[in-house]
Length: 232
Length: 232
Image: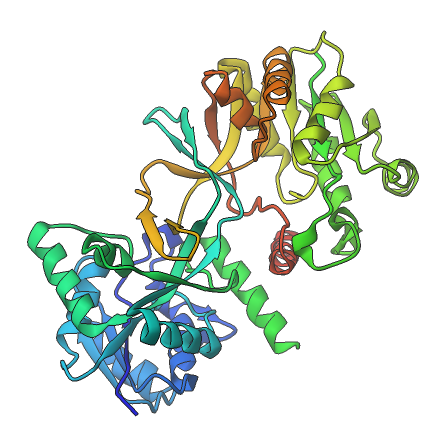
């Protein structure tokens, strides 16, 4: 079986969380957020190894208190990230050898993904070369001017909330990141960099539950979803 | 004090809920969804009366089992709705006399709004004539072609997830609905009909918690949010 690494950016400061602790270390059901995320990939047979990207100074904490303490046994390297999420993914990419055909990226702060979703995205990338999880937008989405007046209601047809995991041909993602850095372009996800190259990216049906922990109410939601899963 | 009615469309079948019971009657913390919603407006001092729009045949159930049984004492009329949400709001509007200056609309399936949010929207409509609750979009939003390939990543600046409550000058909303009906236009919310008239609509900061119950995972989330509120 080929190597198929996952890059997990986990350097974000989570300013919108109103919490001084790195949001990766907040406890969900008694276990740090990042451990939930790592266990998804520990369980996902298709993933061969993990590249965990952390904030400068947190490397040892991740190695000892997270990976070793919580017995993440899949080969895992901890690398130092950059200022923005995109810089961190780039750091991760720099640590992956070119003999890998594919690479996956998954937010450290999405602890509610599943090994099954990882498998679906991995399957699709082998067909299309670029595949990302997403769910149809439920809400009405509008744009405003700087004063908060509505300028546009977006037609909801074929509009998706994009999630991770996202998977790409390694060469393609490296090229996309180099290109974006050269031009000073920052995207909110990796697919955006690929799209700029004109490469097709396929959406794979994700899970509404697979939220990114961003604001304090997200923690309540995540606790509830985990509790429900356990009680099944 | 002027009359300020709220129209609550509650006729939706909730097909995405995978449940044969009308989603308004699903129990949250032991109480039907719609009762939670009605209690928000029972508590909101600014609202004078309630126009509850139900599916044909459900009128008596609402009157007896909901309004009377759960002691909704604010003046409430139950009217019969139409096929789409927009038709139901129109039914509600037809039951409001022209001496009201403003009207509010709130989804029956948004039981997590608060009286404080209702007050904020009511305050803003008195200034701008049209005000809707919304929260900044957190996710990356993309559009796909019919085959599921991404065609566009929407710039996230000033993009909002729109909620209810929404409030408008009554005359303006009536005109917007008549215009939409004449042209066969259906919008996903009332603001969309107003926007078509070229009228400015202002966004009022809503609450991330104020979700619309659409899919089964939303029920788990709503339960968790209510439990958390009670434990405060």
